Length: 411
Image (cartoon, rainbow, N blue to C red):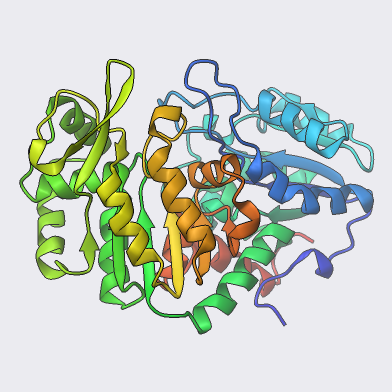
């Protein structure tokens, strides 16, 4: 008996379902075209089941965050879903006001509408309780039109945002099939992980990684941490290396100078468990050129890890019992700098370990390298997966559990 409701607990035929998904996808920075649709594909079983059971499906999702380059409309996402599902999906250029309400009112069983980017609602990302969010315009304006709220956004399950938790106190709520599968799989893994447990963090963000690494090592969830990408650069700068003006400007755009003090403390406590790159790759007149740590600073961007680092990390990964992978090793979209990601991800795919892969760009790289079938579990989660692995409660899951036992909700 699950602590939260699932689709099995409700009659779905002819019911209006508000389905919150995480379709925050990797986009091309120039065209804003979708680069990878894995997150959409993984929610298809939920959507197809709702269509088959003749529900009326209203989809709510976000892309980017206000002010970021990838903060955009969901019209391309709706088109991508329509193509993958082979079923009409109507995009609505509204979230909760008259246009959205009229579209929902006019729906027939089996129809799907896709509302616009929910982060265009100014209060979406405010830090409030579920009960406080339930009083928002978003929830109150949509509430009269829906029968059931379904959350299938595991990738955002760690965020206490309005569309993620605000409906659970006031309307019948449950987990979608993807959310259910993620939680069931991860709970099973966490009960008996194989040692050693190795976590690799890469990608283009480092702020959240600092506290994650500290908790993982404190809780003895991780035995070894391998760093690539921007997290590695941040830790190297905290160690006292001068990376070059461009690289250090990039770090300060992502995080704050105070965080380097936190990293320095972390490194002093866990010197042997945190591994950093010893060489890198840069773009030298259109060619890949590798340079050692001792060659820094450089006027060029550090776009990938180098050969020696790849070999060092591969040897460590081959000994693993469990591997957690979050973030590419470099700018893998550029063929010149795919080497680190390709070699390390291939090593993980063939290691005699249970491999968990999380995060949108990480999954996109796995797909591009045709390694999906060789990974033990592909998770849609990045931050949510990391928090789960640290033993933290996910606010969205807690809201769903609370909703199961709430007699006051609309049903």
